[in-house]
Image (cartoon, rainbow, N blue to C red; front, side):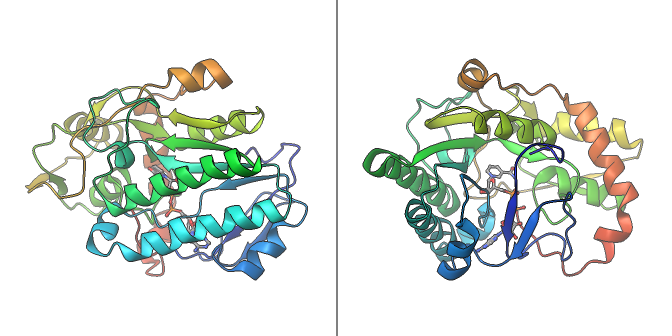
Length: 298
Ligand SMILES: NC(=O)c1ccc[n+]([C@@H]2O[C@H](COP(=O)([O-])OP(=O)(O)OC[C@H]3O[C@@H](n4cnc5c(N)ncnc54)[C@H](O)[C@@H]3O)[C@@H](O)[C@H]2O)c1
């Protein structure tokens, strides 16, 4: 949501990842707390019209190592959130979900009509929440829309283990980039600014159901590395390791439904988005290099 928009914004986050003292635009009310805590959530939902539900345990590999936390936080926590939102007369909920992790090894471009087949507990947890959103819409009239994000990258992502963040940190530290597999795997990389504009566009319409938000183009890991080499101007070494279980090989998405129903598009091309991201990491090196408190998530 843009800083100068007409919304009154309440942010709830337990700061389990990211900056310990985040700054917000003027007028934003911030509560440091857990969304799975009923009292905190009840308090935060007072007078709220729309919930944009982004909080989650978002690590795919962490969920493979231990599937329980993603169930307890993402599934049980989101279920309680929907219950409390209903009790507080919240009008609508925008639920952040995932395309790749939820659909598994489906033929790309993936779209909203495809049958989900998650390969990781994280993907399964996001599918379960989509189910509850659909049920709360059907049974109780709570207006729920699910937005399935592709691979998001951009500034302020230094706590992430996802590929763009990991590669940029490695390049700056002059370490080799670790590629799992042969580098032919493809992803749909979406610049965070385009995602935020997409969420805001969805917020303004009375939508229900599921929408895929991505850039709508496949990019191989090899192309990502070549583009990072170009924007950074640095020499890059690559170290290949075996493919990891739970990760799909290739996924990118069809964004036609979101484009036609709420004018969604993703105008930032990969090189421009990576340049902005690279510049942020260079300019904010002192924030992320020494901050051991920044725990990691995918
Ligand atoms: N980043 C991506 O590429 C991507 C792709 C698909 C879907 N998503 C989804 O988008 C949403 C946001 O992802 P992200 O990449 O920004 O993740 P992230 O891990 O960077 O951020 C998640 C936020 O939730 C907060 N949080 C976690 N548990 C909490 C709790 N119990 N109570 C309160 N706050 C809590 C964390 O502190 C963090 O600020 C998630 O739902 C994720 O599943 C992200």
